[in-house]
Image (tube, helix red, strand yellow):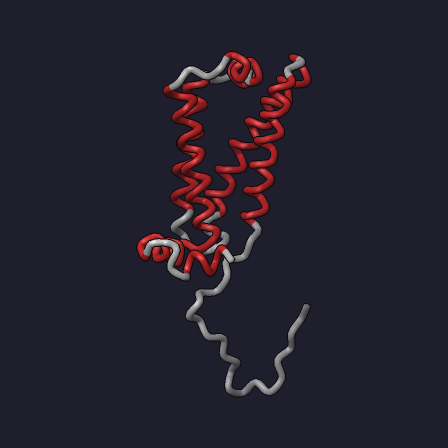
Length: 164
């Protein structure tokens, strides 16, 4: 349904052209990467609520929140760069960058929840763990063949073996 909406005219032609160029995996990298850039900007240029900072107590001993914001931005840019490779496997660095930061944040919040008895940190940790899991699942998706691609058997093939 979403595929038909995308290619059926509900989406402007320029966006359709972009999604056809980068594929589903690339679109996921582009979207998640943009999200990471906004997370990083939020940590770099805004004052985070005190409760959130408390949940990050242990990793903030290593690096400041502003520097973590720059790491988020960097991972987002790496992911967006991976969106344009258009080949599964070559875009792996983008998915690794996404999963890396989500996993670090999940672990930091869950540590804060357990060691500092912060219930809100447990929720934040769960959200980032879900995000890391979603990224890992999408990284395993194969890219479907282009819509205009015809699959033709070789001329001399009389029997095609299909393995399931």
